[in-house]
Length: 327
Length: 296
Image (cartoon, rainbow over all chains, first blue to last red; front, side, top):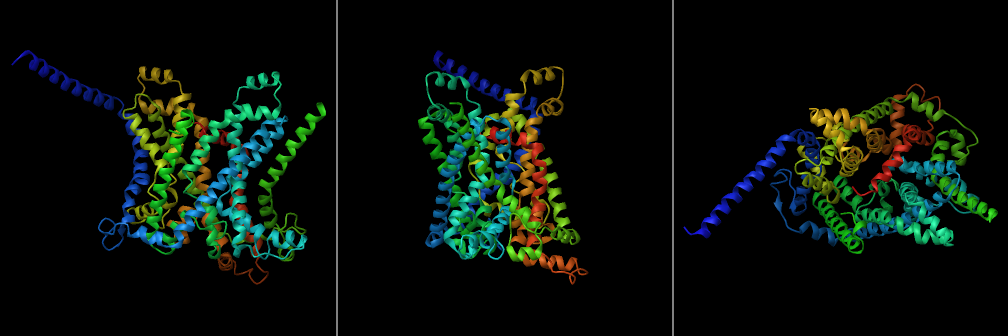
């Protein structure tokens, strides 16, 4: 045995002991902090059951589910479910509705919330500003079922405020709101602004309040007016928060608020061309029709595209500014 | 200069008042409709300022309330149990993840974070809870699926524990021989009331307002929460009629049941508890919303 191989052998042994000792250190650490691991275990187990097990369930989309054979025993049918889904007109309609509504919601909510936040910050009377903040958050507390009642109060064909008071006052004929599709894109958008802008506004306001006052003092000395201060100081400094909130929304652009599209139009069939989204489609296919193949295919389509969108939009933001990215 | 500044303030307030009214109007209409006299309602519909006020809708609800009281009880029960269990489980995951010494800390943090990025969707979840767990038509279906924990709350709490609890306190307790559980209960939790209040509040709103679990897992109205009952009545007003008539045989001949205002009165009963409690927890609520926007 020459010197070199001997050295190699010694190194190998020491490597092995190092590895073993690293393992031993780890094991020791686990033993030392076992109480922490034990503490986290129930919650982690819940996430495994509630979130990870259904992820394995995406295989259902590639199967012809037959309950007699069980879910795992059912036959594989490849992409048949997806073929059926994308052959229908529905696939196009639900994708279009989900995307278009979300794009409008994101743009509108962000703009209105940011504008209101700037105005709230400019109001000198503390008490008034506080009162507005409290009141515009109220819609956030109300469940979509009750929002359905609120909308019904306005739009009910027989007793609604629109048909009984406002339209006669304007000399117009009553409208049967729940059977005409053309009004619903507007109604749903208004409801969404009503429910969502308050909380977004509070988030932006917190970011604006967090800005160091020295920037504004310096700008005032340099002769910048209010509008210039908003454009040159407030906006760029709040941009990270706007980006994060928008990223979160873009990541969910393939998801819709089920309650908004199901409860608010009272699950009306004739409105479906403008109220059916991926979520309501999946629900109806599963619960009303019992069509597991179709609904699981639509669900997987949603989850996959949604996931890709989060990764891509995050990567794009990362490229421009690392600090503004989510991860 | 002085007067232009005043005009500017007036304009700002005007815009905010308009938007605030926009937020409040529908809620106002709900309250006023529930208080409208039945004959008046037939004549002029749901109005902001009804000419004749009547409490008959609430009177009827009170007299025929067995089903409503039951639904109310179920909502309170699921809200209390869900909030307590969810808050404990979340804190018990968030605290270890906030400790630098925690083994597999980064992998576990990713394990939690990934649940926010990807999910299996409704169908596998539904099949899991109905076929493997047999939750259909049970009270557990209103508490466990989807609602009990989520990654967002865990990350929110972990961030708080990591940034607001000085490690020196934990270390010194450790040196004094305190056990992990004791440190958690005696030191960490008492120092964390702001985040516990915030997340607890989110849980209360989540459970109180949830109707989706009831919609998919309940076919039997026995376990309907208040929201499920409201949902049923919203989509099918005859349901309200049939359930009031069966509970109110004696007075059914004396007067027409004010269905339209009763329906609104039910919705009022559904929102009032949150609206009444809101001013007390508003501070924590706004804080929670803003903490959520900060990267965890």
